[in-house]
Image (cartoon, rainbow, N blue to C red):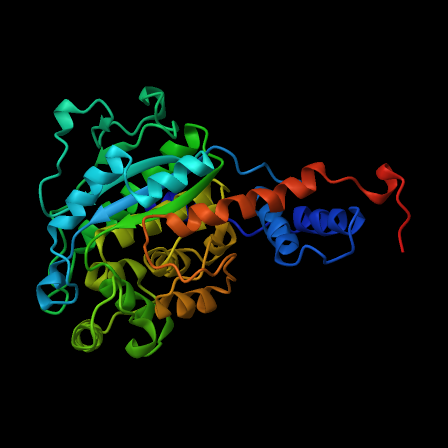
Length: 376
């Protein structure tokens, strides 16, 4: 599945991009007056292979959740059980991501790809839960893209990763299984009608493997890729940086082997997000990136298939320093910068209207000729 997906990812359509630039120049506004939105609309036309590109409607947030063996190193003040508890909150509709999703009219799908503790919702008793084997568009629940019905997919590869300071976090087969889960979720959501995918994540301690991934793929120093996550104190931050350095020294991950990097130092949610991005790129569907977890996964996706960057839109600049390092490496400029560091998909959801607006301009704004407006 991974090889087939990578093979389907192609470079942007230059003719569609040229047509979008030409159209932008004929719209009733001064050239360049919409700033970054103009280039975004051009990129999305190149992704879709048509001008104007489809409106990014029926947005779908996919929140991948997993736990981390490195939590044992004291890198987070939060107990690991919070991952499962927050899944319960997502499914009850009580998290920030739910509030923002309702505002944006986006659906929320939560994917347990490696949560360590039992979930508060019993799959057998919850009609919104899908068996991981049932990822077939022909048998989808009609609530898949219903913004009012958060949905859980149980697709656990293992109950959390191993401690990456001691051994590889995952085997290559486990990392591959998580990547392929992300690809399947992308296909499922797109087949159900999603016109844009948004990345979400949940996992106590997951900013530590994200910092290692960013350092591994960019070559940046751990001091530049490691942040305070949920707001750790100075001693915990120093310990976190030391953990990132120790992981890099132990595994010496090779960025030319993205699956190996994900296996050695990644998390199951990072691997699954990389798969979601690859799956979206293969289907020529934009994927709106959230924060530092998403962009660390995006680095892995770009290492698998450089052309996948064409499907990526940077929703916001996370307050985590590694996010800026990763975005610079990917060549992506974030749409908004509000100092957010929550994750869940919240920043991506806030950026969604900006993406929609960029495309809507190409669909609805009159040209100078059609409006009878004189050009300069």
